Image (cartoon, helix red, strand yellow):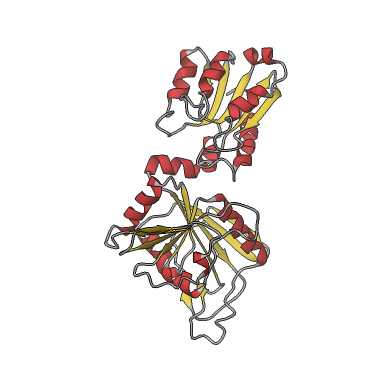
Length: 346
């Protein structure tokens, strides 16, 4: 490996992260161009449909003649097809950049190795899999969508020190059911702005009356997916507000009315298979499942999850609705104000 390859790729991944809220359903990509151990150009994919990272980085180089002796670092394999923009691999060849370093291969069928093939066919030296795991994590939603043909599934919940999601309806303290800090709530809303959809079951929609929007932060509200098998939920609930598009999954009705759509599915043994297939067809790359206990356990028991974000607050309830039990260990542990946040990856 050339000296500095990991350092410059780390910078490319940092740049890619800047597209966190704006590039979906495209992947997040960053690019750095280096000439004689000095960065002469940088760019990232800024918005869906806009120029790709390589285009922005190349355009930022003041002296284009340097490109013929430079190395281009990019966090994802350059595209090789005409989409909303021309192929980046063609531009790299045209600019006679002699060396390209790539972190992740692109699983999208229109690319999937074709970008690397184009570069090598033009005589360009190609180095692959530099900081691959870091770059793969960055685009885990995009990769899951194209490789598994379903959205990336994130389960999220908050539980008390003694392992409860909430209080029972007849608990005299039922009104005092909030578990986590304001900072954790704001972080949860930031996550909502990052994902395409958010899902709850009927009980959570009825009892907690969540809006499922990212109102604590500035951002795009996700598609609300509500499981209401027998259409028993009241239209006055917050999930029916006009703040976001809402998909009501049920067993009897198909109808689109304004921002509310009713979708009929078979609630038989392969219900989650059907639901994930429908969401994939609608180009939903990621979904947060926020409860309740029955719904979370259905996803866990069916092995339908890719990531879990589990808050543990300081409160104790002594009795209530039990949180899901996990046998896996968290890959990441961090403190958020007074809470602990545990993150698990498959």
